[in-house]
Length: 157
Image (cartoon, rainbow, N blue to C red; front, side, top):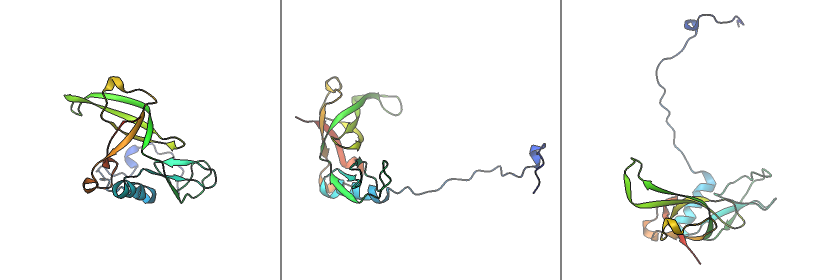
């Protein structure tokens, strides 16, 4: 092996074409059960570390704090609080929407993490940080096993 400095870049062998990336994204073990619970049971589930007690949403199979394997599932409930939100008045093409869309980060009590989702049944000027909201699911026959099986989160008492 030569340790000589390369002074002519054309001496380096290279390929001047494109390598198209092809892959299949899977939701993994935790994601599969999370979405199945939404689809089949209308529940939002997290995972709980038996060693340090952290509850994760979205669920994980390894604890980020102590690196222990997690196999305990807990129902985190359907209600959470608006942690942050934004209102969009334009679609992806920059055209005005008929009605603004509100997106929020929703945190659940006692849970590390949260969900990003739409808010519904509320006007933008009525949304506030800390507002209690609850999940509204599609009819069971319409659910496909995705986060969109939750139509939106609406204000709750």
